[in-house]
Image (cartoon, rainbow, N blue to C red):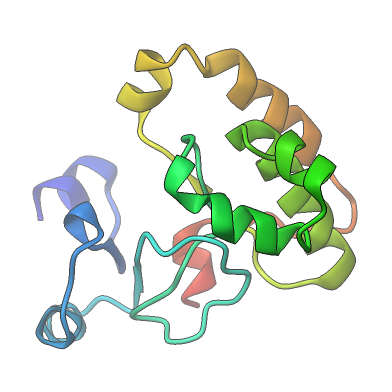
Length: 145
């Protein structure tokens, strides 16, 4: 309610804190009147259940994602090596999205970007993915509409 008062409009989308949730939390989010809720599940290009929507990429190097990255680039060793860094993976994922369609959703925490000195890399990704005439750019709130 405080945030809605500050921004002057209703908030109808939700992100599960820390990415943790159960079916009970999903129901609570619905009962609270939200119409869309995002998880931290990565490598997703569709919404699926609007209360358990995944994302494409977290602006962070997840070394534990090596298998998913390899699968994403169809186990091509040179592409795996190129996509070990999140910014290269973000661009490759965007290319796939433009070619195949779906939803491309990246997210990150400013404190992680600051901690790793990734502002320039993030700006590079935004320059790469921005203003593509084949793409409709929307907010999370517009996804639920």
